[in-house]
Length: 63
Image 1 (cartoon, rainbow, N blue to C red):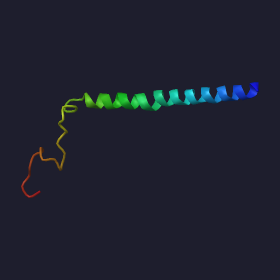
Image 2 (cartoon, helix red, strand yellow):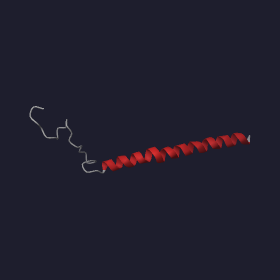
Image 3 (cartoon, helix red, strand yellow):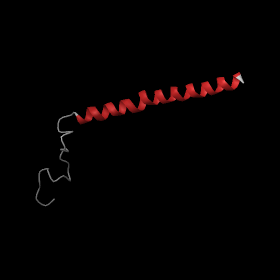
Image 4 (cartoon, rainbow, N blue to C red):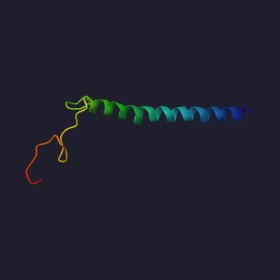
């Protein structure tokens, strides 16, 4: 009886260790990186940088 309880507790503890590891290694750094990218100039205000196919970029005749 006691061995089953210990096995169950070990599985529960292992689940929380894996969940916390994922939280700190994958999820939070990703959110921080997204937030950092949104704070760069020209970002986060709805304006995307003008790219080659953008209508905001300079127009060249014949292209």
